[in-house]
Image (cartoon, rainbow, N blue to C red; front, side, top):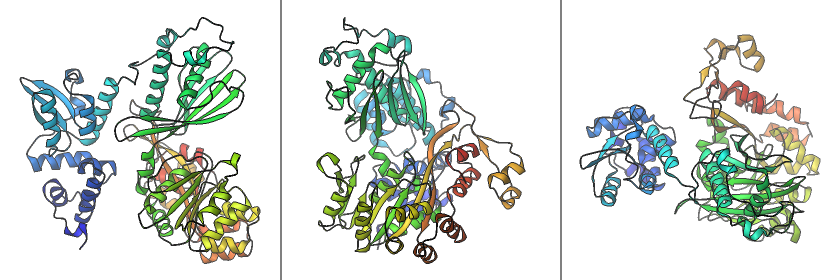
Length: 573
């Protein structure tokens, strides 16, 4: 008997099943998964979009006999911020509302969260009472509360451009001279400014931070949802000091300013969460440009359902992952999400029964239980050398960060043919081009046809904000020209466009993957053996019902997930 079948639902899960919000099997799986991830059932359901938070709140209200408060109508000025420590708010996912007499009222999405109430009572000495609210509004209120209360490591608070200009960072020496960098990099204002920038980038969900010196300005930009946005212009005379501080944090040589350097920063946000930054410096005409790539381990744990695969595409990927041997190739340009797709697959495969080894340049996210190797060309440790060593260590699964040359390709294919599952990436634009790229490298057609099992080509598109997106008025002729079918249009096709609100970035919030997932079928393998070109292979994949990137993108637009403008930006016929 499995754990799911043995589980007997009570309380809110039972109510959700009886109300028809969830079927019993889904409710049981969600309950067990939430418990394994140390989440409340409500948070798990909302996070994974298994049920609407308003519907859950109404069901909880009926089950526990308590009314639901609409947080949107609540006056935030009355919040007793000084009474409840922000760590309690963050740990227990609750929110202080108001104090009346000797009773403190706490917003909760889960009325059974008695431990939170007891702990707040213990710390404040005030009796607490739960007020039921909707999960998504509670999460937004907590985020706002934490941002308002948070003092970024150095207690800097929010800085505008004027505040930055007032920073007392003068060394009393000409900026063009070689300063005593060791004294400057520890200046408190510089430390606080950099800490604030890093924390703001994490809170905004940025993927990269750019520190850029020019002749007359110095700017800081965040890449959020794939788009760069300027967020600050510190005084231009801070160029050297900011660069030196970042190099100290990254354990680089601060005296070396003539050549590029690489390093890492680790920022611990809480007891259980840390964020890594991959840092690279580049000497430019006006100083060192420094780019930080934000590496959040949580992105590898997000689960395949959060990546945006269509149901049939997910099934193909899962089937390939469950094969004992073969090669899965993920392809796309830099920044298209290939690493997250690979890490998600590795996370699924990462069990005690499997020996998994990876060769990466560089290792972006640490995965416990996976043997990760950082390739180092300076000492002769390249992808081919690491892969050759892996095969002498009894592997089950091998991941190669990128197939760049014939030697690496041949070793990877040999591994896939001799009982190993191999995952890797290539920089090509489509699934069909991946196969011809391997052939152009010099890999024999027979080896490609017999070793490659699945190819995933992908892009990342910005998701429309659910709070403000609006229907777009697009003529039928334009929709047909874009690739939508007459059947879709006659069925009431509705395309949405970005608007913009205080909860999003120009009408977009977050990103979603657009995928072309093509298994190597017998017909495609035959074309490979006959040295068919990428056009013929692509036509065969379409005839077998595997949509290309453009078709997958149009589905996302038709489902209201993203805009037609965004699909046109990231895909092309």
